[in-house]
Image 1 (tube, helix red, strand yellow):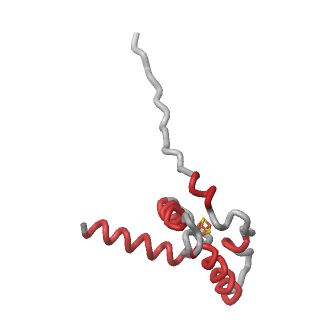
Image 2 (cartoon, helix red, strand yellow):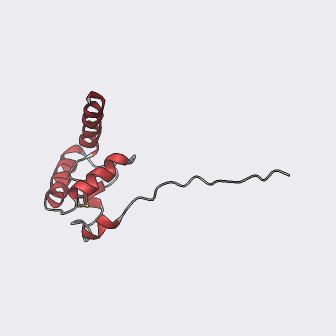
Image 3 (cartoon, helix red, strand yellow):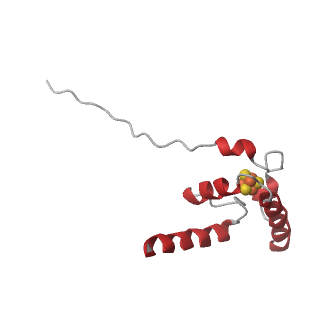
Length: 99
Ligand code: SF4
């Protein structure tokens, strides 16, 4: 009689410890993600304020690396908005391919 073993896929759990030191812990999430239907001028002002919080954040690098490693499509993470993170992903990909 054969024995069939089931192996469950074990995905690595993200390390969320860095969030304990996040400068945005007490901030309103809307500052980082914006409201529905936000217009470009308001978005630019909001993102500038969010990025100012990120600039003083002690876990900015960890936050950005986390956001770049996951499909985080929205919001300001690690001081970068969506378009800036997409550009950073491409830049890192090019750098890795060149190595
Ligand atoms: S870098 Fe910005 S979004 Fe990330 S934890 Fe710090 S304050 Fe929050």
